[in-house]
Each structure stands twice: as structure tokens, then as C-alpha cells.
Image (cartoon, protein in one colour):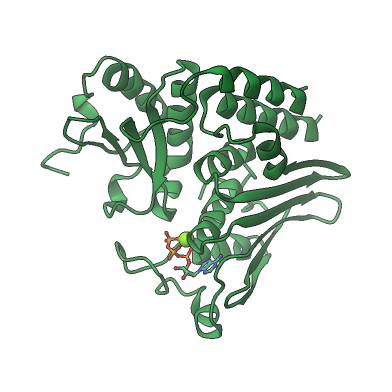
Length: 180
Length: 121
Ligand SMILES: Nc1ncnc2c1ncn2[C@@H]1O[C@H](COP(=O)(O)OP(=O)(O)OP(=O)(O)O)[C@@H](O)[C@H]1O
Ligand SMILES: [Mg+2]
């Protein structure tokens, strides 16, 4: 993957596939401690101990169009290249928590990339899922809870052209503010 | 800065319109977004479709994502389904190609032949 935000998109798609209806993403860019990390927590169907033990092996997949699952092994590889790693906690029927950390200054660390595009895509594609998103850079934070959007919109779809564009602009501004 | 008050204003405007939801008989643009698609660049492609359609304020067009379409090396793959017409499958898409597909295929009704999956793929 060219960007860490693409891994994030991919890992969050797993949560959607696992029927989560609440997904929490935390991204922390901590240059001082030389760590860039993200965690995705969902309330989806979770994994059995057996599946959990084999999930970093590319030959584990729930899909039918292709025999290998790539998402988690790719992420693990990208983290380890920098000297970081991943941890996965999961309980059947309760949910899953995946944490990935990268060594910030490592030359192999991918750029974080376009987080506003990633979040916009998830929020507008999966309207039945609530997303909580926190992005911290140093001591600044950008925070979004899509339940607040839903409350205001009262049934108007995120896919509505003007709403979709507003969400994209809102995310872009919030992200840009973090680096000002 | 964008504020939530703005979103409230948008809601009021939109709910005054007759048809709030995009209907089921609309044109569908389906983007393959499994790991293979994402790695090949499907996210900016999907984003280009969504933005282009929103900016042109096209109604009755929805952009949705799907899992692995099963031709990983031709990703990013996009299927366009116009009601009453045969499904068109575009391969190796880019954001620029996406804009052209919106202008030519969605708006003018002429599929962009160069991007369509061919016999030799
Ligand atoms: N959040 C999750 N909740 C429940 N199960 C999960 C979750 N994430 C992954 N899994 C399980 O682990 C498997 C492997 O995931 P991985 O992302 O590596 O591959 P995949 O999603 O099957 O295919 P690909 O990512 O290549 O499109 C999944 O098929 C699923 O069974
Ligand atoms: Mg996956």
C-alpha cells in the first residue's frame, strides 16, 4: 500500500464485513516518541481463537473470490518493516481491536496519506455504521462522531450530493487544521 | 471553518426537495474495494466518481463499493449499470478516467470504449 490511510480503509472494511455497527478509529502521530499508530475497534462478530491465531497468515480468508486474505498480512509487514508491529484482540460475539504501530522516523514508513478521503468513503458508503474518529498530531486533535451528523440530518442521507460534499470539506478542513 | 450549523442549513434545503433518497432504479457505479482494489488505487477512483457526481449534482446516480470482483490484476475495476442497458466493466481506472466516464458515459450516454475490459485481458 502506498499510504497508511489505505491500510486503515482496508482494516475498517474488515470491521464492516464483520457486521459491526460502531467502529472507532484512533490515529496518533507522535513524532516526539517516534511512533505513528492507529487502532480500529469494532463491535462486529469477532474471531474465534483459532481464526485469530492464523489471521496474520495470508492463507486465511473468509472470501470466496480468491484463496488468500491479504489485508492483515500486508499491514503486519508494513509495520514490521519500520520496526513496529500489530496486535489483535478479538472475542467471538463481542468485537475486535486491531492496533498497528510504525516507527515514525523509519525510512520505510509510508506517509499517512489522505485521511479525509478514507473517512469520507467509509462514512458515505456505510450509512448504517456509526464511526468515531480521533486523529491526534502532537497535542492537537480532530474528532468526529457521525452520530452527531445523523442527529442533525434526521434521515437525510449522507449520499445526498450536498451532504456528501459538506462531509468531505469538513473532513479536509479538520485534517488541514492539525498541521497548521 | 465548516460548522455543524451549516449541515443543519443543508438539511433544511434538502428536505424541502421532493425526493430525498436516491431511488433504486438509478444508475449504479460499482467500485471494487477489497484489499486488491485498494492497493491498486481504487480509493481515489471512487472519490473522483463521488465528487464529480456531487459537483454536477447528478440525481439518480449512486456510487457504491463492492468486494473483490475476481480479476485482481485488472484493478481498479468499475462497473457501470445504467437501467435498461448492459453492464459496462471498466478496468485499470484512474481518477482522470473516472471524470471522463462521468462526462461521456453517465451524462452523454456513450461508454468510453478504450477503458472497457477487452477480449485480450
Ligand atoms: N474486524 C474483524 N472482525 C471479524 N473478523 C475479522 C476482522 N478482521 C479480519 N477478520 C477475519 O480475518 C480474515 C482475514 O482478514 P484479511 O483482511 O487479512 O483478509 P480478507 O478480508 O479475507 O481478504 P482481503 O483483505 O484480501 O480482501 C477475514 O476473512 C475475517 O474472517
Ligand atoms: Mg480484509
